[in-house]
Image (cartoon, rainbow, N blue to C red):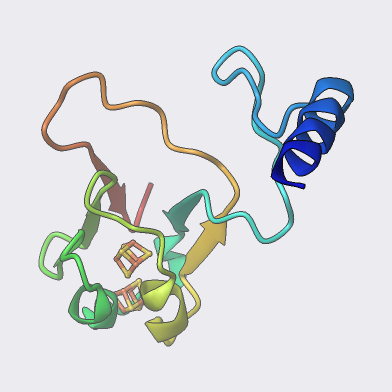
Length: 115
Ligand code: SF4
Ligand code: SF4
């Protein structure tokens, strides 16, 4: 019985599409709910630091005096807590994937209010 079951599985796998893709040669599909990366638009930012406080991995640093926010892409786990916490809707979860870090221990992106 087990042999028959194995044979059936083998035949099914032989004639069906593979469940995996040849990444990075084939791009992974992007779905509407894909969590790719967090993006900031600081036009309406009041530098309240709520996003920094709510981030479970301490990926965000808010500099109120310089009106700058940085995010370490390697620390971010795209949980979306900062997006939910921002009272001014300055943070958005996009489907855009981060570029590889190429061996750097940190990969910070800086956002300024006037940029
Ligand atoms: S939570 Fe929103 S308004 Fe507050 S500092 Fe972060 S981005 Fe700015
Ligand atoms: S998505 Fe989550 S881990 Fe990434 S910066 Fe926002 S709160 Fe931090």
